[in-house]
Image (cartoon, rainbow over all chains, first blue to last red; front, side, top):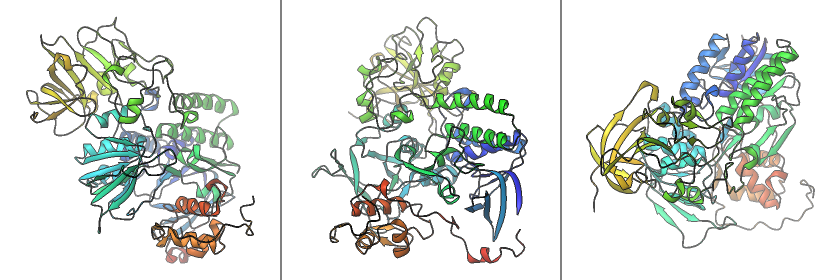
Length: 529
Length: 108
């Protein structure tokens, strides 16, 4: 039996953060993870994260993973991979399977950060090869560089479904549709908008009736559901697809905590069975803590802070932190955590229908049903103003915890303010330099630079672009509107890829003046008709 | 209503068109088999698990636990939340007997 001050189970965002926090306070820490690579889901996340600058906003998930690993190494954390914890017992003793051996460890404190597993739904044909979880699709694309299919249907319009759909497009797959049984899109509007402008249609209040095929998926039929989740006859729609992705939710992997005898609670707001915890992740078993998705499904940004808090709590328990030091540290972290839990997607707003933002702007039902704002609606938001010369147009219409745009503008033309969930305001008094930093900094890719005075009859629109190959300056193609429909001819007049943009390229397209507030995407080709 | 009240009338087993659908993929148990098990008197998830081996395969219920629970709850006419979860016990992950045999054999 080997003893450690702290044993962390799971090397994802919560587990690594907990280990770093505790090790920095002086604890001897070991982390076990059953996977061959650390980082949990972080290394599959190629998109920029939301949140505030202090908590790694606008940094891509995999880079956050690398940073955490580096910090863990510097703090002297021991990370053991391919190590499955197969038992957790009341006295904080664990059994770990490493290769062919079963080893016993004992922690004076144990933090369980095992994350979550994907929820499945069944339909006729759901066991056919080609029906996969969204997580599997990410693993295939982002870790192994394999396309999950050529043409894919996504079930689930939460952030996972939206983000993975965009990644499928980036990987060169076609997304036939995003389907959700709920009547409204569940994820961030900005995530939906960036998929919609690529031409992906949304089918809300729809579910999968059947996956077709003999040896693998060759097609799928969806149908509309009524308020009682019954399918409405005659609403069936068929798509030829070779893969179906399921992104219908996550369940906490809390079995180890259940096994250790923790008091558990079962609540849909947490995504399933979770340990009863206090604000520091303390379970009913003394010295045993939980952090991250295992204690309730949230975003990775929250998981990292929860991990820090649990790490600090473990340090307090073992006397490495004084009560005072702990209170100060915990207060700071809790403030950060609560700022991420504000806004329209806050836990208490889950499932609620909101009609206005904190600022009193109307919530777009159109966005929630189709994935994009109408041209009339966009002027309702404080980030969209009629200004002469080049200026940012921020199509951010929901209160989400995110503010990198504010810091991106050297001239302070964009203001979010103290409340991280507030809608960004464009200050018409401050002139925009057109540097494009805000466009690249927006994790939701909802900032565009519009210049209606580029030429007499032509305007330019700067759009964030994360596809390869990059168009070249001088190339002629087609401007797409927010729904992905072909709008007008467009000429690429500039392509900017700076290190500071972190792989988001800025495409400047020239379109006729009256299209400046409609053209939001670009594709190569010649318009027909 | 007590969830384990076995004198409770839940009616006769009525076949459904999707009874053939596989629910537990690892152990290849269909929806119909799970529903029949309830009518055979298996009112708890632990009993279902022992009777049919649902959730006892390679994925250890990671995929089907929630699905089985919903089916059993519906058959009993209660909400899924009222149904107690099956016990969680070691080994939490599938493991070869060889690894167990090696315990204490050079292991700590």
